[in-house]
Length: 84
Image (tube, rainbow, N blue to C red; front, side):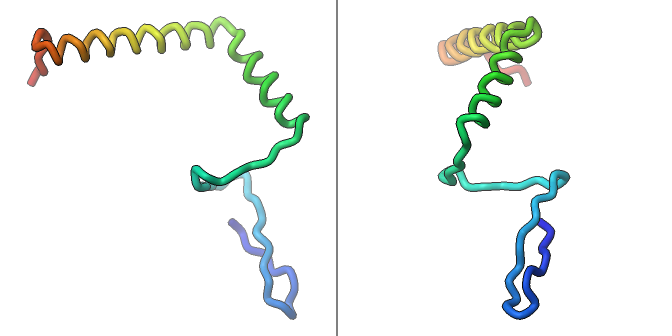
């Protein structure tokens, strides 16, 4: 974050958000949003999930979960072995 001196007498600094930088936070941090912000996020998410592309990705994701479960079961039963 870019630090900007706010007041020369107190020495306090103000953090400035920079869109080009990456930020981090702790999993337990809480963020507050307005109803308008929540509605925008919800509507954008739903609009994307209703596209054919998103439906294909979700279908492939579900299929991959089934394949992984089949592989796991058969590895554990000794039917499938690791290839070296």
